[in-house]
Image (cartoon, rainbow, N blue to C red):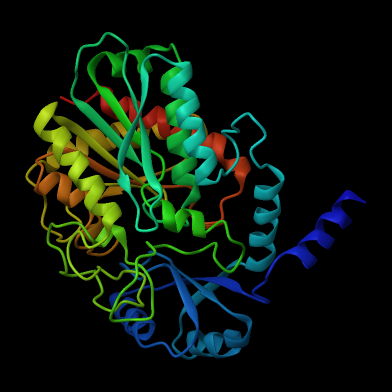
Length: 412
């Protein structure tokens, strides 16, 4: 009876995208990769690319509405693309997630194993500051819609300033697991007395920012139609489309390969480097840390694909610290697999995915000189994509924090 009632709620309370599916395409050679990339750029169908064409044998995930299904399948078959259905009913998956997020609204106690709205996250950060003497809320600035961008600084409480480790999530609004993982990490640093945590806190002060892009993140809680929004919500005076990709907006190789100049593309670079106030504010805060206490490491969390990513993003040329990247990546990929057997691949975005200019890890590495600049693509590898169920928060966060701590403690 409860299950029936649940689906009645789904049917009456939420907007839907009837018949939407997510397809996984398997390009087998460079020609298919290039052809698929060109087709996406000029597609007349209403699609949403979850995972872009990159290299042969890397899957490409594309969301397609019901009315375009037949034409899309015809295109795949005529061009001999191998494909499968990754998500058969995206509508239902989104609606179930929406019901769950409404069912677990703030009730006086923060739930680290649910996807929380930004207002609840800010409230929890303030609660933690009041509860723990070694925790202090820091303010990066305000977003385009004037939301405060807050994080939490965590130390070992000895009042001795140490080099900073920065970890952020939610730079892309729809990647909810990244925010949940940063919140889990905050809680672990404050409550875990184990040797990995205590060693890290003895060497570094941690700055954790759960939601880099609060406007976009808040927007994704507006129902199924808005859940998969990626970018900021700034207004472009020259286009009807809102926002830009904050991870193409940093002032390092801005506007080069892998960043679009079209405002309606998800990889839109923005009007100029640091045109997005959220990016400008975070970069300014990071630069002050680098000049004052030293920024030892920068971590930028995303979803999905289970990847450990190192500079460079904009070029396939190896960075000068490639040997150290390989050493740390081996530590991370080994530790991340220990609890649940989760497998990660490691490499630079330009080599194992595609070139992307104006990204955060290239800026921290290339401009600030932070050797240990990394990005993570968290779970999963293609069953749920961006709509990772809440029951995956705990294992994802556990394995990720294990591996980040191991990598941090191994830094020279």
